[in-house]
Image 1 (cartoon, rainbow over the protein chains, first blue to last red):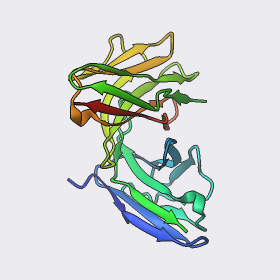
Image 2 (image 1 turned 60 degrees about the horizontal axis):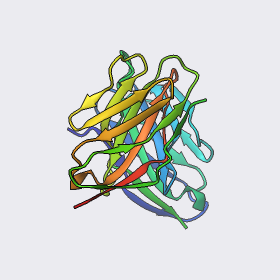
Image 3 (image 1 turned 90 degrees about the vertical axis):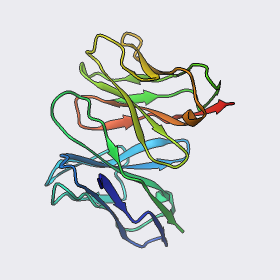
Image 4 (image 1 turned 30 degrees about the vertical axis):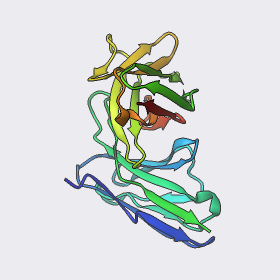
Length: 115
Length: 113
């Protein structure tokens, strides 16, 4: 079972470079989201999507773009990387509907360093 | 707006003893869900337990239980009979009427042999 797959797992960028973190899930989940995790800060929500063609901002959206053209994929784009974006990024998905059980399924994380 | 607060940056517990990790929350939504996740040093996020705001009983999952006090807006995680493998970061999270799941800053638990 693939679950939620993130690529790459590690990336080093120079300030000003752009890149895309890929996220794919094979569970037919409607909801997908991106978090960043910094030491002592917990996980902070960047962007989320409740279905193909629908995205919305989370707690810390600045500097990041997302799109959701298919149910399976939810890429996160950094248009001009900054050292403040050095972090570990997690993609997560869940099935919608029913009760608020809403357990999130996480990818393994992508460690990004911006020099 | 939703807010999750975990006031214990770090905790120690002796192996085989019980430990309580604190979590308080704030929301104006009448219906919401509370979650606990575990993050071992390997980095993956592991779902532990869920409590719905209208659930009459406190949630339990094996050695994990959630002490839900709605009036005090607290959702503490209780781990009974701690094991060395319980050493990890623990995050409390909440979802209200929006789709967003918001996390607290976490508590690092260290189990001593």
